[in-house]
Image (cartoon, rainbow, N blue to C red):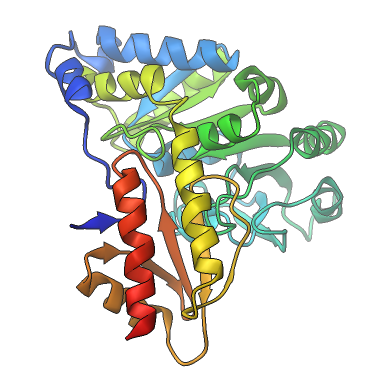
Length: 341
């Protein structure tokens, strides 16, 4: 048995999703004529109470388009030091937008309104113009940690007071929504723009949506074309994303329960020094002294468990729709066997 915890991006389309993809009506999306893409964009915008949406190949593209549209070269973007837009998007803030970054030391990837307020530069020609704040919910490097809605609203208030734009990297946004029983429309009211990934927790094979006001999406569509993201008969992949959005939201609670079950077992395993609090579908644990994360990941791979060493002493496991209860039991027993050897 191979159990792949490296990421929730490794999922395969379900039979029903594949059927939806194979039968999808399509057209040329660059001309705005793909009915399946149009339906997906309309549904995403409606769910979050936004005016419009734009379908893109990846969350990196939706984030980078948003940053490009919201900033001018020489501006400064405020985000947590572990944020995906800074750590894992190839230096795109500098490359694509010509902007600099103000990094904040948050709590498991989450910054506060007070930190954001203190990071805004004064109106001084010697300093870059602070123009954009990016939050990530859930936080990948924070172990799937979630912002509270109150804190996000407080950060929006700071942005309004300072004339800043607030963008959300919602790579695993529905994990947070399900875990905290939230209304997606609250996110639409709190953020100027939202990136919603459909190929992580929701299990689509490809794609993310960028949500926002109609005039913003019009500009974003032009930037998507410049970035090489103009797709033609994209309805085949949009159908998988649409199926995921319509059918795979509520089941995220299963992934969260599986993560808690494994994390509880790891707490008592001698291989593990400590486990970050588990809120959604991500487990990050510190490896006990005497072994590195890479060594443990290699041992687990020999037993069919695929994990990811994210730091010299940290391992990440991500739960997703391809992980069954039987795989969870197998994983726990495998960790026990590796610890005993």
